[in-house]
Image (tube, rainbow, N blue to C red):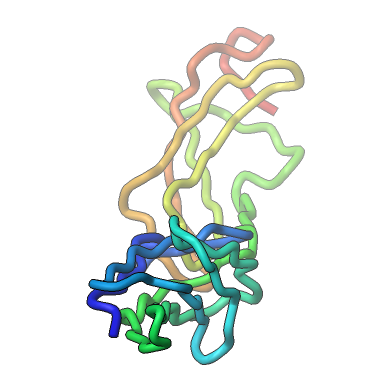
Length: 173
């Protein structure tokens, strides 16, 4: 039987999307003839020559469990360990709740504007907020810490205005 089979990409407990290449390493005292790649018990494809890889169209959002089976020249086989990944092909949504679109916003001391927003996603790694007048971005903030993954999260953050709007008092509409 083959001595070793290991999925090398993707990594266990990660998020994946779109089409990706699953890779594996396999070894045997004789020869590896083919490696089959599976999601649960469904065959994705097989590869008959190294490097061992498979193009996988990830499909619907949710958990996937990948494994590979190596076959030697005597048709003996060995299964890899299962790799669990979360498929996330759905784009996140976000909504600014306050201030309401089209209203005039007056800055606080230090050029700060408070923004309430909601985002929906399972795998949030950053939120970007931009404040602009009709021609120029006057403030922006990227939030990368303290984010909560879930179905819907409402937050309040402050954006510091980087430059003034046309009226000279930093009013932004």
